[in-house]
Length: 283
Ligand SMILES: C[S@@+](CC[C@H](N)C(=O)[O-])C[C@H]1O[C@@H](n2cnc3c(N)ncnc32)[C@H](O)[C@@H]1O
Image 1 (tube, helix red, strand yellow):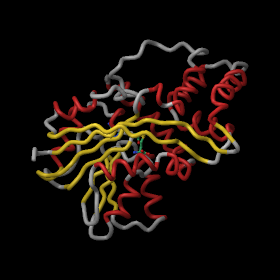
Image 2 (image 1 turned 135 degrees about the vertical axis):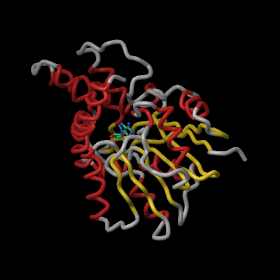
Image 3 (image 1 turned 180 degrees about the horizontal axis):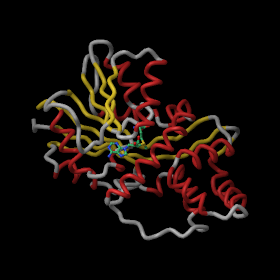
Image 4 (image 1 turned 180 degrees about the vertical axis):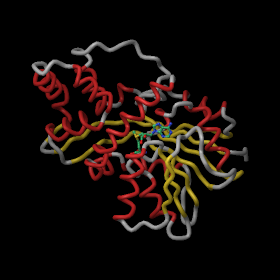
């Protein structure tokens, strides 16, 4: 990725920070199964020192801080200032004293070797500029028998929360051919792809677990539309490229496409994620 594109991506996350913060309660609720899966897979427990890579507005750091308790700690990292600020503000609001914050990129972690028990990332690995270097960095900073664990989205077709909207919008905007290795939501959707990155980076006993769950909340289509078109940089860009007269047509077409996921005041989408974990040393 050329530096100009990297900066553009980080600027887009800076704008997203505001919206991820605005919808923080809803996002925490709909993505909670990802946090639970990650915590289980990385075997996080009381007293551990955990690194969160690409923590966004605070998850999974905020949840893990309660699990590890006062004898443990969480170190939250993210390269985007706006994300760090919102996560830090939320930790203060919740009086969580065992979280430390560092603004940094996954491929250049400012920590000594073997500082942490475990390193995790929720929905961040697909956006790393250089995933191989990032995984090597995560392995470097965990102790010899530690774990790294990343949760990423599974295939687009298994995630209508995303695809039902983009499939419609993409009929109205020109979508240039995608580089399968460009940072985007479904970069690691192919089974085995992130496993390969971990193995090439030197992780041992790498396993991939498929996590099927429902993205569920008591919200209307209107609230869903607002949430999706604000929190995603890609959708914000695509919406901005539509002519103003096209926008109501697109919204109506999306409403039709997702109608079956809204029943009696509840949104419920089937979803699929992959949790990929490995150890620093075999055994
Ligand atoms: C989809 S958000 C997920 C945030 C949070 N972990 C969550 O699950 O709510 C992706 C995050 O990856 C971060 N990110 C982007 N590039 C990164 C990089 N090079 N290193 C670490 N994190 C990065 C973004 O700033 C953003 O906060």
